[in-house]
Image (cartoon, rainbow, N blue to C red):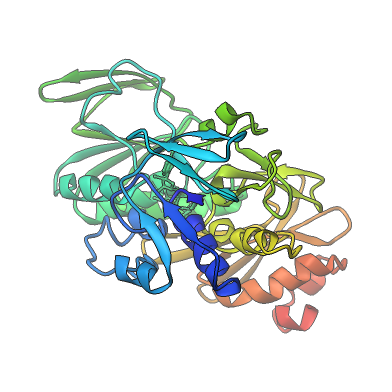
Length: 397
Ligand SMILES: Cc1cc2nc3c(=O)[nH]c(=O)nc-3n(C[C@H](O)[C@H](O)[C@H](O)COP(=O)(O)OP(=O)(O)OC[C@H]3O[C@@H](n4cnc5c(N)ncnc54)[C@H](O)[C@@H]3O)c2cc1C
């Protein structure tokens, strides 16, 4: 039984079917759509592309063909560990032998009066993306709360569609949680050149809905917007697990194979806080990569095979046709150096011993594979070697 028919749920079901032809598999999800991958929601779908690459949405027949029973529009409301049963919103009780919780996350809401106004939106699902796309029109005044990946992708799409866009960010720079300052500065330049107004150190403190717009009070004064998109992070959908007594702390605690504190119950994808041996702690990833690859560990564990999940963190964003890939560590304390080759950039984060610990690539995805190996290898390489344009990164692996 797999609860949550998103990317991690689909991957777990399909991988499991590939390993075990006999097992009964039920994939149960609350959305009315068959599973899909979310990255295009804040990119191609907002720009109105009908068949975005990367949506990975198979039709219902594909599940039938794989003998995966797919139950859509069905919210699971409870797990009874003692009897090994789930309860759905209609009161139906379904027995399981093994359970995978792949319930993902939801967009964090703004805890302010006025946030319930229909002109205040978030973006998590296909339905959210379609609703937002339908409202983006030339001249619309769009405010975006949050200059993280999703907020900035929406800002980029909206300005390209002719909206007047203002981004309000409490922190001091763009994408501060996941890239070094030099990359934030570049991304901010793309937005400002396109006409987006970026306001930093600017917390949204009040929303006053009025007939001609939303009056938004910020630390820097008031602005009026026709629409406010709140993009201030995600909250894991771990309540089902918590209420059942499964250990959770900002995500369901799981070992590197996805096992939770309850026997025969696993956690997959973004809802899981996974034990990472290299980091020496549990980590929750909000990335496509974890939803795609951590289910490999879960499906194997379900078949009695140990295959711990231990990938180097990787994710990306696309804005204004530019591709930014983010690998490995991004924390403070790294010395960032830049390798520029024409329009391509590799920004490398070195520790005190001269080892590459993290990297950000702009329009330079071909360097992701050598960099993964360089980071995993942990060899001290030093600034001079890494900056030498005559030495290809793949030679340093
Ligand atoms: C707009 C957007 C853009 C993104 N862009 C990128 C990107 O460019 N690059 C990148 O690396 N990552 C990106 N991500 C992150 C990445 O796609 C997610 O982390 C990924 O979707 C996680 O997959 P998941 O299957 O764990 O969770 P989800 O995809 O959230 O799937 C969970 C499913 O479970 C369902 N569910 C929840 N509770 C219940 C319940 N009680 N009963 C039944 N069903 C339930 C949910 O409705 C949902 O369908 C993006 C995310 C979003 C939202």
